[in-house]
Length: 242
Image (cartoon, rainbow, N blue to C red):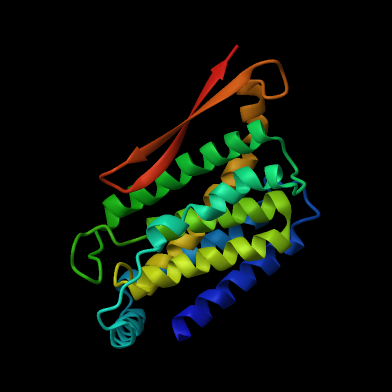
């Protein structure tokens, strides 16, 4: 329960940070926007080998095992995508968005590519063993990165009110990754950082995508969802049609 409380507090701090930046254009890069994700990634990385942090995450794992027993919930494999779906679909439910659907598709696709590249690259370099000792790709948490990416996309597109709901889902995903013995606490902290950074990259690169795909012109963008069974991850392929 303490782990869930800490993850919830983390989400509230993220939302608070986002509220301060709402007055700025979300497609404009500002160095201060790197502070939050960089801090989360740094803390998570510090926890890989630091003796004090290692003792903390082992204590958390032990308490989770006592609490979990033989009861595991694998909803995190699915709900990690809910915030991303909300980013694309809330507009169709009558919620006012800042960008049209084609632009949101471009932002989502760019964010997914950025998060996938960062997370897989770091996993390959770190080779951190999972708590359940199943594989050596624990750091950082890809599920958490996907969920927090979607949550930050929702916050940036629809505001903090809808972002709070999306971040609640992302926090639940992070909690379940630790609860199910699939990740260490520092894995999900870093995963949150990579997810937020990926979402912001998606919006920073939107002006460039507008030029490349001529999103304001007569061209149409077709979307092809992809699924990687080996890594259990989804992706989006964009095709520009004249």
